[in-house]
Amino acid sequence: MSFQDNLKKITRRYQELSDRLSAGITGEEFINSSREYSHLTSIVEKINAYQKVVSELDDLKQMVSSETDPELKSMADSEISGVETSVTELERQVKIALLPVDEADQKNAIVEVRAGTGGEEAALFAAVLFNMYQRYAESKRWKFEILSISDTGIGGYRDASVLISGQGVFSRLKFESGVHRVQRVPETESSGRIHTSAATVAVLPEAEEVDIVLEDKDIRIDTYRASGAGGQHVNTTDSAVRVTHIPTGVVVTQQDEKSQHKNKAKALKILRSRIYDMERQKKDQEMAATRRGQIGSGDRSERIRTYNYPQSRVTDHRINLTLYKIDAITNNGDLDEIIDALITCDEAERLAAQVGD
Image (cartoon, rainbow, N blue to C red; front, side):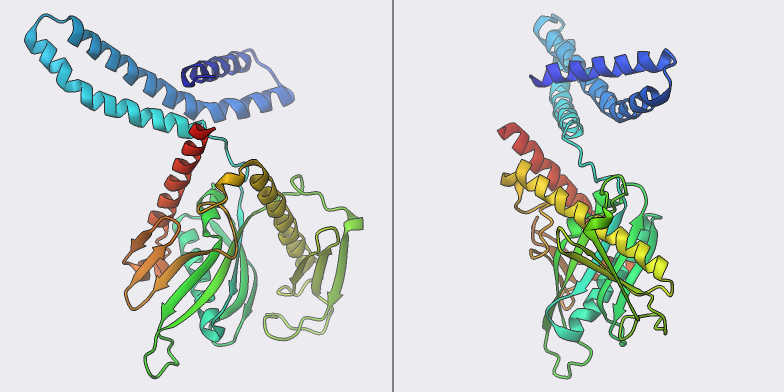
């Protein structure tokens, strides 16, 4: 099907849905039709804007070829270049709107940060990243609900996880998955040498119960007494919970809450999201094996970004973007410039892949 035929098909479907909703349908048919209508509305608006400019371009070209008044002909000819640019940009916007939608994009996200190589300095950097995402969530007015934190006692985090809730959270944060590297002089370093350490970030779409059904036969739940570093509420009851998903071997532990019930609920939420993410990644690999490279691979072992403090530099290696505002990024969560560039690059890659297909 050609691009133009596809636009006609979408416009016809949009009108059909409009007529159906106006006819007073009810129940599940109304819900499904309303959802599809809402999804197509923004696409059809872009199609209408594109077609309007295409029509304007056709009129200008017609005027140039048929107009006898030299002044009017010259005026129309001078406008063509600008309108052609608008046509190209609006066509690009329509094609992006028609790209397959990641069903997880509108979900909330569970962000897990873990210290990697580098000892205590890596744990301190993990805490910096965790706080960076908290500042970013605050700037977006998203809810930031800490699920667990295992701290080192001097400001570092061995690992920490959080549920971030809001509009389109996963679509904005999903490119953060991977290895983040830091280069800086530790406070404990008397000779002023720059050390390199790393932390790993995993961003999982929050899975609802309808997304992943956990069968009782597939789950083993063990309880134990919370103790040791990381147990924020160490007590004398068996409140800590370890949940094992037997088919996949995925294990989640929770001990931050005093209540065993609350720890179990958090553990199941994380478990469900990890399994959902595993299935989602497997599906992505099967459907688009040729696109598993730079953007959106979600590979936890891939070094994606370096934070160089002496040079005040943050470099995202996937898109070769370097910004010299490390304090604004790490202290204030000023991530939009990086995230917007990653999304734009991803859209370009998917458009190119679509053309190749």
